[in-house]
Image (cartoon, rainbow, N blue to C red; front, top):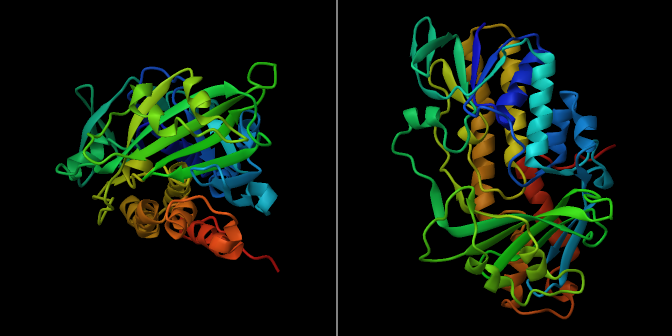
Length: 402
């Protein structure tokens, strides 16, 4: 069976490795000429690590990442609302890791080049569209028609293949712009914490470490993402250098006992700006011999650290279906049936009830003012239920053990 994978990002490379586990060959077509360690931080949740461990990559990733011990929630006044253990510290089989996206990509790419046949990943080859007939599918690449039995579009949020089937589709933007950076600094709290502070309506920032002892002096590389709802402001661009003056004022007085937020932001080596966008869930991903995967299938808000995990699950599910040995198009249909609504639910939840809904709820109950005692506002049991509800929807709730 000739399997063509369009895009060599997280989804495409994980899918290639998942196919290899079943003894199935494929070819990955990646538009970039070379793989560089680009981007900022990403969090690998336990259900994502489960998939990566099954591909034999957990130890490689642990060697270049930081294992999170806890998740903590603060209001914009720096008051602690809720904290909970994460990953193995919460009883999961697999850890929760903070890692540079480029290092995750490198680990996946190296594994593909080591395990698959030479020529299985082709760089500098952009797919400009697909055509299909009863005998197969043709990928239009550099003026050439490359034939395959099926094509899987793993070409990201701005997927060229998806656009062919949904030409009028546009990103869904609700006025939230974001800025991201990485700062070298001393560890925050215990150096193993994932922090969420504030809400998008009055300023929000997510912070977590991604590299330990980055300079031999005990400093970490700390990833941060600032978010703000800005009615009337235009949607910013992807991977464009961000301007400090566009957002630093929101955080000018965010100086807490455990962190000076404006100082951390100003110390970042590079700041990038992004729009907070997703796309409305669609009725289908599969069109005959072509289907979508990862961000090409279910672009979601970068909240809850779930995009990568869902792409990794996609990869395993489709590889398992293809390994059954039946009609390839039936496998594509079965994959879509298993994954389409499950991921659509996460897209919708990330919009309305993301993990930081905990902070939003407290802001609502306090009228956006500081509190004297959080237990007088809402119980820890209620906050835990809000957190657990998101985990259930996202597919990584900790199952009760007998």
